[in-house]
Amino acid sequence: MAFRQQQIFPIDLNNNAAVGISLPFNGPAVFKSNYQTKDSIKYNLINFFLTNPGERPLNPTFGGGIRNFIFEQIYNDNIEFLLEDISLKVRNYFPNVQIEDLNVSRNEDNNEISINFTYKVINTNIQDEINISFT
Image 1 (tube, rainbow, N blue to C red):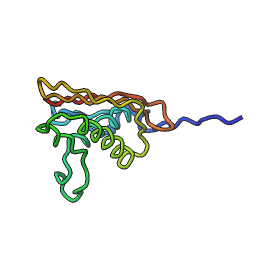
Image 2 (cartoon, rainbow, N blue to C red):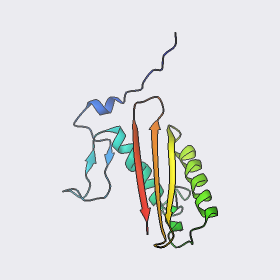
Image 3 (cartoon, rainbow, N blue to C red):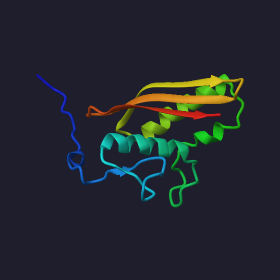
Image 4 (cartoon, rainbow, N blue to C red):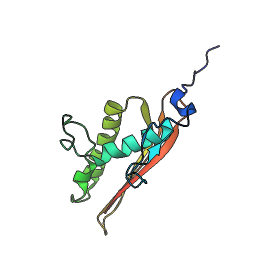
């Protein structure tokens, strides 16, 4: 009988070792550290999507570029493109992250787009949700 082995991140067991930094930068020493892999993956995804390609030195292709949609008119074609673009970029840049549910909702009256997706990390018990809104 086969069973799925769950991956445990050893650094999560050490409460004194920081895994990454939290967003926004508002800690007592500018950066607030996080100590769990789950939090680090979530903030890495948020940072990726709020970064425009070409914005990061020495890595011009890094970034989700969803801020480019802030001043675009909201059409069904734009929403479909955004759904496909987010899925493709997560597969390419975060191969261990699998999107479970992806929704892009819109409010044409306020020219607002809200992106909500739930994801899981493959071979772990890590699941979380990200919400990003643009008005």
